[in-house]
Image (tube, rainbow, N blue to C red; front, side, top):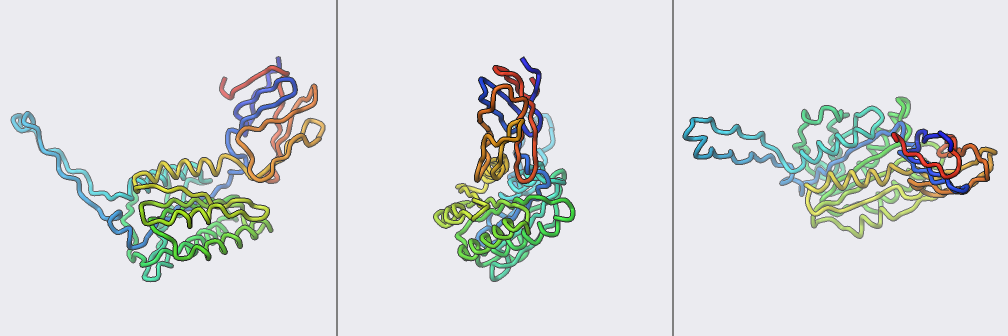
Amino acid sequence: MGEERPVEPFSDLHVEEGHVRATLLHDPTVEGLDVGLYLDGSGSMKDEYEYKAEETQRRTLWQWLTGQPKPSPKAPTNEVEPQARWILQYLASKDRNGVLRVAYWACGGTGKSIETLGELAGTEVDKYRFAGPSSPGQYTYLAPAIDDYVRYLRSQIPNGARRGLAVFITDGALHDADQVLAATAEIARAVKRGQLPRMNFVLVGVGDGIDEAQLERIAHAEYDGVGHIWCHRTAKEIKNVAEIVAVLVDETMTVAAGGTIYDDKGKIVKEYEGRLPAVLEFEVHEGCKSFTLEVSGQRFTQPLPEDDDHHDEGH
């Protein structure tokens, strides 16, 4: 049996009678990912951003009898802050430098303004407060937030940004769904022309005020040469948002956009259009020594063990 082991970006390799099954450890195109996090700043989020002090825990009878001091009260918090901190820390682990652009959107009287919190580091989440915008919006316009992220991503290209991901959280129906679709179509055209890095958008709707049909319409749109750009999910309460964001981001970023597999003689043995699955399965000729995955202009060559050999990374 051969001694070849998986090399990045592969984590598992199995060959049997010319049938290859290779599992991707991660999306090989995610290097250079620049992430943005946009929190709903509309007036309907007022209660979620309100800081509330927890009731001071009373001493037990034993603590009172023994003269133990009262427990210290916990610092006031709101419903958004713990979720935002967790999401920021999680997304920073995907980002090229661990620093995210974070902003409130749907701000100001028109709901079209952006209030930027800055570029926040995932390693310092406990320092950041998420108290909501200074001027909550009366309407929910998403297109300005998309424009803000695209401008930011453009500015980061000279610094190494090669792919984009923006997460948007909202608790209401959008007032500009048509403009969102138009803006996304323009982004897709720019990506196809090579004028923008490939990017994906995650949209999470929270509570009963969202229009799920509207979110589905946005997420289901496909764009020539790019495919889907949006994905979405809904949550009953803000406390469920962090977990949903993690699932959506993992689903979005663990597979790449299409790819081609060549054998050791340079012959195409499999082509994937649209999205590349996490597990690649294909046939190679007898005695094939390696295969090469080409995706987004990058090539990754994996030596092949002899038939009936199986390797897991780390085993």
